[in-house]
Image (cartoon, rainbow, N blue to C red; front, side):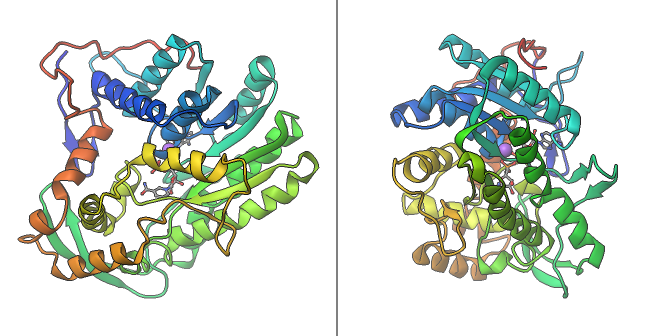
Length: 396
Ligand code: NAD
Ligand code: NA
């Protein structure tokens, strides 16, 4: 079968297995080129198939020789229909890990459920005994809380007043003004229920109670802050409340892990093109201006560069982990540099449909977006017939 991108709205319905494999290989090569990290040897990654979670799994395995268990929620391929990119990424990860004799098993299911937590605990007991790092990297619009059975939906809205600003449709390049009405009170609690720290705490309690966390185990979850232009809709909006909750939960988890000397961190990461971020209004315009600025300054990083730096220069240096006044690790330091932010806010003023192709990196945005699905990846022959049905032996 010849597979082409098929867009519907902001999502791509198809994914290319060979392109996804090449993306994974490029990330592995990058991590190897940076040398060995004296990091964790047994690692659980929740949200391991794309974005920052996949980069965390690759950095652990190919930077520190770690055994990894990955949890994700992806669509397997079906006759005449491609799998979701995270499925192909995980198939490729497994292939490369096994070529190097690295243990890698995955569980494809709902990480918010008690069943998947129990499956992971059983698998750790059976194969690894304990884990010394747990990466929590879920991004989801919905969560069913297993305790009350209620399905919560997150929203991306401002709190208190209508937000009006520029946005771009990155497919067409059209810059327009967008107005987003303020949320209802219940939108805040619902968004916190999906993207806050409750499920992270449930994971860590379950793992701790089962005795599968090693002495001095570390857990890290990912957050975002960003600039003033996106503040009303991001950090001071509904999703920001969820991130506040996630960040506060880190302290609760550290307290709960006291007996084993465990520690929970939140790392604030850079804005990047992922399936999750492309759905947020205003962010794609900011990212296209940010990419332009950071590339010009030689500061641009993707998920793998961010996570490789997080592990090698923050988490596993052998010294105390540096944090900000709120206890957070900052790997968004280059994005938030004064000169970068000043440049982006100047460009923001100038941004229009006419100017964006020159002042912004719309092309880079589009390329990153297509590459999320395995398209437009260099050195992939897209005219070759491919088998879209790839069996993954260790996905449960
Ligand atoms: P992503 O969409 O690339 O990855 C999400 C992962 O979660 C995938 O592996 C997916 O399979 C998994 N997942 C979703 N629902 C699941 C479920 N119910 N059960 C099991 N797995 C499930 O997202 P990302 O951008 O890498 O985001 C990861 C974290 O990083 C999020 O907390 C996000 O807020 C944060 N972050 C993102 C950015 C950014 O710009 N993209 C910046 C800073 C922080
Ligand atoms: Na992820």
